[in-house]
Length: 285
Image 1: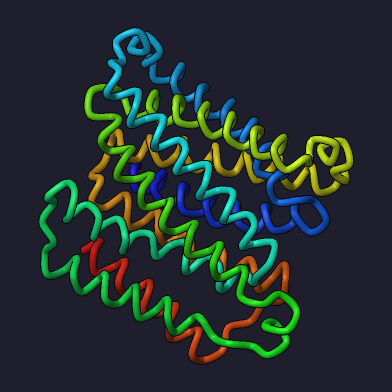
Image 2: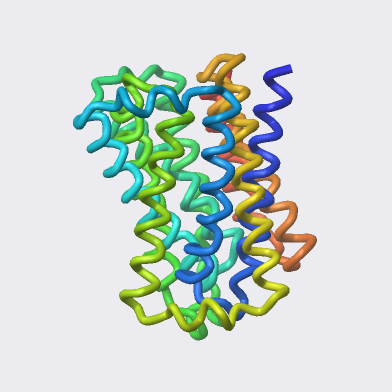
């Protein structure tokens, strides 16, 4: 049963990117991130009360809290960059770069956490890296209209996502992971709304089109649903299997981007997608 929850996590994570893209056609990405985080916060704390880990809140020491806060800041930075990248570039290009955070996470875990890298992990890292590069094709029209800004934001999103995983692992060493996620989300919420205030976009919150507001909220709900499935799968199953399955959300995103936005993959991009999936499956099995 837990494996169904793992695939459910991948499904909702893939849908999240599509809904987010639909919600930022005219809405500023920073404003959208702040609004979406409110919905995610509700879901994260709902998970805490479902599993009954709220009683551990008083037992969180200063060291754990520090890493949770740092992890939250990294998460917020990752989301802000990811939304901006989605607003500027194609989903088919942004998502693979974001998913390459798996590679960075493994490298950082090896350096800072002294986690071993098995031959399977090494092969998986190479395949994912090669696949990501193959999916980064240059298009003259895209270069002319949007430049390479989306690429910078996408890379930063992946870097911050990797830092989130490392700092998050250090932060939940002594508490329930669901509680750690909820605390991090509070930090993300504060950071997102501070960014709205700093950039002078508070007035834009009231100007968000109702249609896009719906998509933004739905993307938050999809993220929450993904987390609920993800943590349920982790609770009942093996993390070494759950995590790679969750990363297969890229297949869902690519499929929906074709249906919704008519974004097509070239042969080169398709080969890159196959390499990314193959690398993920190598880690899985």
